Length: 238
Image: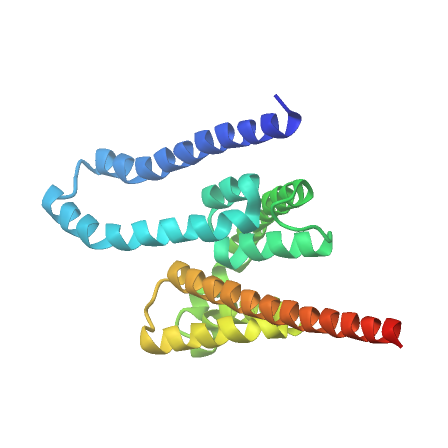
């Protein structure tokens, strides 16, 4: 067995174990609350809620796996799905780390950099949240009724994604135009569309735009090559 195969086998085994462990821990919270309070939710109400929400989350879950795995790699994907906040923290962190290290996704180097960066991001996020809660617990209670604070908090994610996206759009503006336009159109048609669905649609739009651009460049290179051959033949005849 190769070292590469052995590494991915271990990643998949431990990733599966910790994903199931995290799922069990999350499910145990409401179970323990029900045990302590001696109160259990109605099965009929739970069935209605699950029947309403499950189709949405199944679709979003499948789309997120298809979308995130090629960019984050195996280790980064397992870590991200256990720790959460993928679209607003883990994904930008992994992509930014790979870009700074000048490595590509779906490579051995990209796998290592993505996994390390997402692990560090998870630890950093936990520390920052703990410090923030302890340091600003008094301020948050005062900010609850302050419209200025509410406006600032509601714009945290747009500011984060704007700052991260601007660097990519400037470097690859030809690819950036299509997903932005498609995303805006989708939000105009359905403002409440799930983030995972919107991301999947914009990524597909990016792939189509990249294919069109590639075909255009390939066609330009093909024409230039034919022109050079004609000039070479003309020069030989003369």
